[in-house]
Image (cartoon, rainbow, N blue to C red; front, side):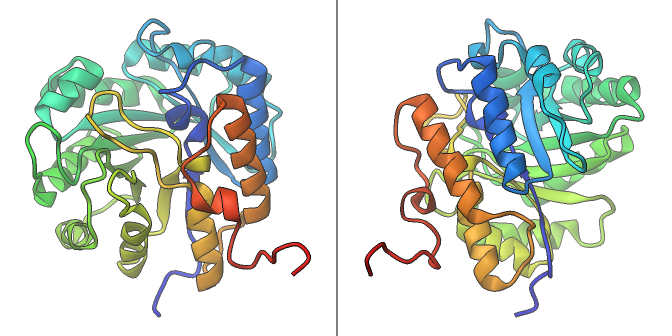
Length: 300
């Protein structure tokens, strides 16, 4: 089918997934990271160095990073909103930073309390401060904004180019509000053309399109995806925003397609059910509850 032979998955569950949830104990957050790396994930966003008053669930980020059982070959990632957050993260043994900026002016101001232009400058400063630690710039609302509706892909790609020029290592285009469709994914791919840089996608499932959007991206040759175990997450600044594409759902699909991830889907399901116990409610992932298509019912 012309699909890539392998993809890279960054699980953002311990950060993006847990961010809107009631705060969990440090040990529970560390146990979740361990469960993900035990499943074979080699890229995990583990914390956010943000104000605990603004995001209570992310309090204790330095303690989380210090408590990790380091697994060889795993990249441990932290989100930072600004230079102060980067300074705090760099005082720990973190491997990579993520920063966020939005194509949507209104969303950007509500999310990081800066204009888009201010964010461009701040991200360049974070990149300069953080070097040689890699910085992935996540471009929010790349497929539409809850405030300004449609966002042309050319605008998102142009912003990504400016961030690369400012020192970002790579760009991830985020469907923050779940407004993307395969057609919109194709439009982004066309706008990217031969643009330089390592491009990833961060997909949310607000309208039930995240998995089909991932497949559309695979057909375009994109090979890097953000997902969250259990399908948790969702922006508090976008009304109705759903959770992330569930890691186990993407891996189950890729396994069936013969695309290598290096991730054990059964162990991922175990991790998703662990999250379910921790937050005290069902996770939205279907694969977490019924398993991959290869699972045989007991006593069948």
